[in-house]
Length: 116
Image (cartoon, rainbow, N blue to C red; front, side, top):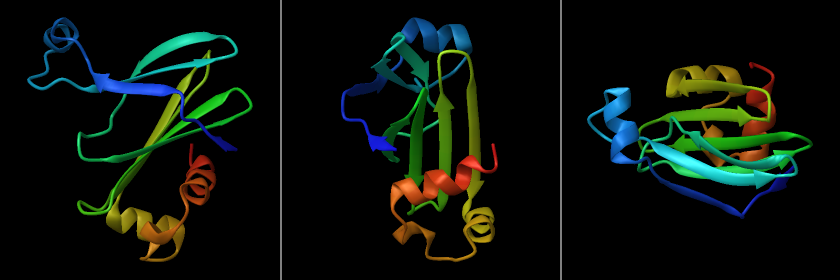
């Protein structure tokens, strides 16, 4: 698994926001892999720490917010999208520890992949 640095995260367009019936724009990521260029909507919040990794054909977007106590993982590839979101008490149970915020992002991703 390697960290990806060549991506852009921005707010979606006002048109997309209104079409979806949202009052605030969601974040979207734009990235390239060997199959093409993609723009995907994210479930991440504006104050989340976002890390992006790739392994084989999958792109992993890890969103953590330790202040609010949650973690989310979205996995994109050319054919599918999967995601998982855990609140702090759920993360404590999944990781078997309450200091999961000290884990490396790759460790968090590897653990969460098992639950997709």
